[in-house]
Image (cartoon, rainbow, N blue to C red; front, side):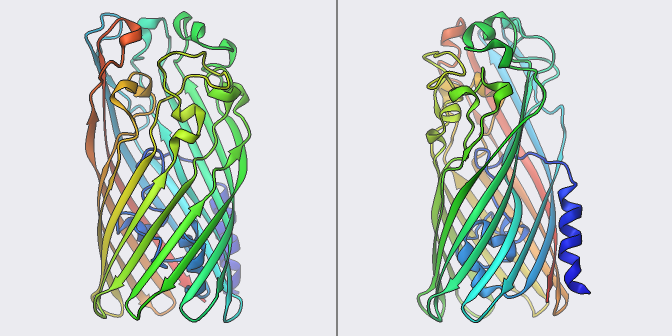
Length: 413
């Protein structure tokens, strides 16, 4: 009877609306609540079945379990334009105050060597909503903002090569939705190859598939190393926004890869860390600069000018007892938004660089576990430098901070 529970929960989760977040650029800082408690550290840590979203090799040490969680995400995003009479002002992008982000995972130990699992999670997204349109000086009307939501489902298989070394492979399906508002008016329409598909067309959707590979190795009795790679995911185009995004509405998911370690310093303390690379520049609509202006929507059209970033994560866990575990972590990311690209990125001010996290798990019984995590994404600002040079001068400055609270329940069969 208990084995019906994962199916029932999956159906319930599928009915929830997609939501948006933005931490390391527009990628989440942690794919599971336990990982969030360590600032996202996950490559060498088999936290739970959702760990396969980071490294499918983790499945070989998890056993049979089901995980269900939800994250409350509250970003604060603001912009200021000065030195340009047409656009000057202070702009609050918090029309949508907070978001709920679900996650679900299931793992099964098929044999001594083989395990499989499924993880459903939100890997990225972005939302802004400006009641006072920052682009009104260019003739734009209505409120302004974007809403990008991405839902990922990774089906994985892990295989234990030896007692200490495992590999994993996963097939990832992504479904994404996007809406842009308030990027209209004569000025923007003159920049677009298809003005009718530039803005204010409601939500459009696209999807695609990608590959995920992972490795974990217990190189000594106390040290585990790991590596993971996720391919670039080629998705369908957002046809309703083929006049905004390069490649006639292209918005692929960037390639990511990284390395991790977990060192069990003693029976109670574990120190772990990750290095992650996110290649935003490989996606034309994200990586192409706005200036020099190439018509929006063309194959090599202007974009948001995001740079590739490295993310560095360090976390600790402490087993207070057989029932209680505490976690903490810190992460630092390169800045994806150059100071020259801040004007267009008022729509997508993903400028946060530092996260500080705390978390804990309590096991009321051997089969069940409750986990919480709180993360503060420290306020970060990017001051424009030549950001409005093509629009009469002046600068656009961006700032963002975030509060992230996650709760999860695990059940071991």
